[in-house]
Amino acid sequence: MSWEWPERINELAGGGIRLEPLSIDHIPGLVGAAETATAYEHDMGFVPRPEDVVTYVHRALVEKRAGRSFPFAVCLASGEPIGTSWFRVFDTWRKKLEIGFTWYATPYRKGIANLQTKLLLMTFAFETLGCILVEFLVHSENEPSQRAVGGMGAHRDGMLRRVIPMKDGAFGDVVVFSVADDEWPSVKETISLRLEQRKHASTVA
Image 1 (cartoon, rainbow, N blue to C red):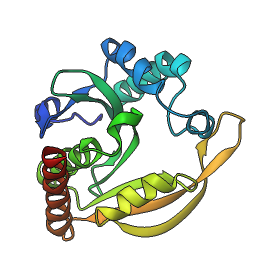
Image 2: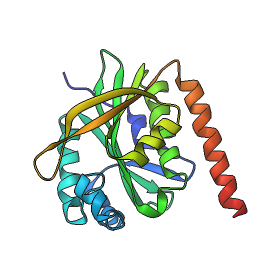
Image 3: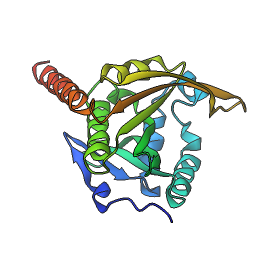
Image 4: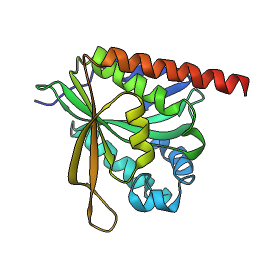
């Protein structure tokens, strides 16, 4: 019996960010977003190479049809795609899921995009799906992402080895972070406060 996501998952939006179910229509915009990343980020697999975006999207759609993931295009209110973020491996028995494959065009990494995306995804996970745990798996060498996840108040659980397939055929290690349901109110408050601070900073700048 396959898992069916609630219809409301198609309507995740707020704070100037829209999370649209990933589709082939997003490919041109995501190619442009991927072009802003560095060669190191491409080599490490943090961001897909522009020429690999078509394969990336089709793989995501295969995962969605198989019921293993629900990939989103992270878009501005205008509809412009600036990256992706996925719900992955939702365990309906243990009531937990993973948020992963998150990346953004470089110009949007220091703004509100990541915080607003995480707020939308975790609100849906905890308050609609009834999750008791949300996990984040971050490459061990992706220190900016580790700082971002930890800065939200997520708990650093430890490391898993040989998890992420790399371009050279090797598998990279990941640092595991998580937020539990009883921690969610505090984490939600932290994210909301940081969003307000960043919005205020952009207004007065």
